[in-house]
Amino acid sequence: MQDGRTTLSKFLIDTLDRQPCAAGTAQNAGLSALLIDVAAAIKSISAMLTKGALGGHYGSAHSVNTHGEEQKKLDVATNEVFVQHCEWDGLLAAMASEEMERVYTIPQHYPRGDYLLAFDPLDGSSNIDINGVVGSIFSVLRHVDDRPADAEEPVGESAFLRPGREQVAAGYAIYGPSTMLVLSVGNGTHGFTLERDIGNFVLTHSNIRIPAETAEFAINASNERFWEPPVRRYVQECKDGRTGCRTEDFNMRWIASMVAEVHRILMRGGVFMYPRDSKTPGMHGRLRLLYEANPMSFLVEQAGGLSITGRERILDVVPHTLHGRVPVILGSRNEVERIGRYHGEYDRGEDQPFTSPLFGRRSLFLPGFTA
Ligand code: AHG
Ligand code: MN
Ligand code: MN
Image (cartoon, rainbow, N blue to C red):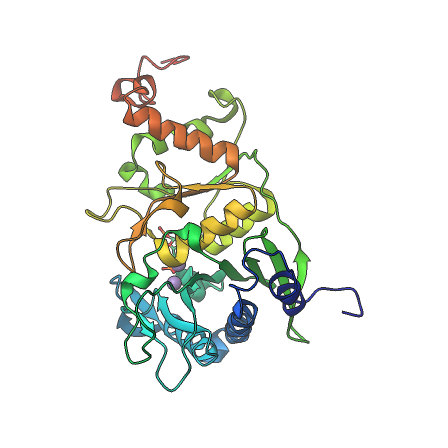
């Protein structure tokens, strides 16, 4: 660009289309065009959200999604925006979304491409009615299909059930005071800010790095009684602050939008946890693997952070269902490693002094206890 700024299009063409040695340059044909269509969907959603209550999109859609959650009008409308912007371009074989029960195969009147797009069109949608921060999250996989190409046949759920490490691109939009697109195609995590009057995403945060050290954590503390002992141990130690074993004070945040939490962590470090809990029997986490945990884990790892379930790397988890959930602990490397270590110690029974009820907070055996 003449003014020296890098637009999203320029970044993608330079990164994906013009680098002879870029990871899979030839294999990634069309990926830049697909991401530009995703960005167009995001601009459209940003414009919709900026109108607020005046846009006529507030309130309930009076329907329930596949997770049993009430859909807001904006959940439905933003889903439609993603579908409309991305179905026609001949780059996708299928889409999957939090708001669609089944895989959406590209209709026959459009050409079918080699990519799969999974997305959460509106993350943190409980924040809509309070004019709080929301986002969109997306993940791109290559469609691995051994069967002969047959445009008649719908794409099955199994096409999406790939571990997150196979993602070729992932990103999110954050609709805050400014709209940003944060993206990785496997060469670092980069942030673009929407220049509203022109309609361009401009590279403003190149090669984001998450500091390894942090003293800030995010968790929905109202679920504490449902957490596993290693998570209770970690959070208790943070809350004990400088008078406890961590010997420093920690800060806590909870925005109820994973996008906003991850964005804060990318900007200044921190840990985000939606851990395994026993709140809903049979549901071992809150966040969905394919279109929440995987893309965010990809971005976090590309920025030098870590993302685990507590017991394994999220990007190595093999999905079993389209809408499957997973515990998520991500962010600054040293803290996530510590929480992973606490899970290991708990599983091996090595953490009795920390997690036994006898040594709980109110225990007489707690070092330094004074009645
Ligand atoms: P969604 O709005 O797409 O359903 O996702 C909301 C998720 C996530 O963004 C956030 O971290 C979490 O749910 C909030 O959970 P609580 O309701 O427990 O705060
Ligand atoms: Mn979400
Ligand atoms: Mn959502």
